[in-house]
Amino acid sequence: MDRPIYMTPEGLAALRAELDHLWKKERPETVAVVSWAAGNGDRSENGDYIYGKKRLREIDRRVRYLRKRIEDAVVVDPHEQPDHSRVFFGATVTYVNARDEEVTIRIVGEDEAESLKGRISWISPVARALMKAGVGDVVTLRTPAGEDELEVLKISYPTA
Image 1 (cartoon, rainbow, N blue to C red):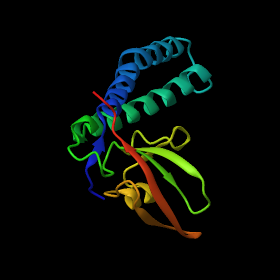
Image 2: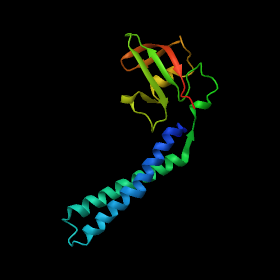
Image 3: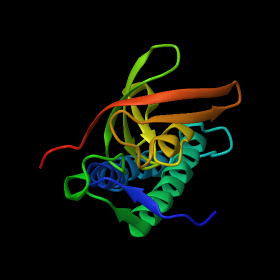
Image 4: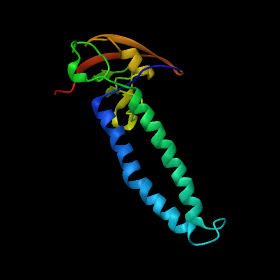
């Protein structure tokens, strides 16, 4: 599926920090362990060598993934959103559902989503249902369990 890789400036900074950590700290340390373990003789039963090589493959795979995501990222700065009366990418939204539960979420990129911290992906069903809604609007969220109605109580965007 070819869709844009939207992310906030904070999300891009987090990916760059992870890439930097992996490439400049973790990978060189792992290479050193593998080199040391390789010098200890029989590699077939050398746990440090076997684990180190496996970890090195994992690091390299993650580095390739991060470089591609960073290269293809479309950074959307919520500060620059001209219409703060509607829900768009980067918005922090407080809504109430049909069970009278009040929920606050922030709509972010796929790589930034962390539901336990209230950050949901812009492609999630909740985010798609809320997009372009204004305060007081009631939107319908379709879930496998049925339909739910969400009423938008508050919309805010981070300040610069």
